[in-house]
Figure (spheres, rainbow, N blue to C red):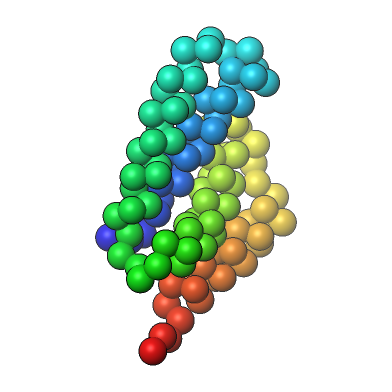
Length: 106
């Protein structure tokens, strides 16, 4: 369940931030800002649903998922194919997120 929440949160955050990018960098309609803000609110709410013992740990794990999802967005939405360095970096941060999430704790 956590994995789905992290992925959904990443998509909401990326979409929300991209709405701002579209308005300020691509001259999209300012109406996109309303959708972007709503998406960012859903993102923040979703992170409260993950089952971890501390908010900081949830944010740390989410960071790895966010990086990998951003590379997926790069390809799927922006049409830029990730190179081997994008993919390697994504794999590294996902490995780091897994260590944080699944590391043995007292």
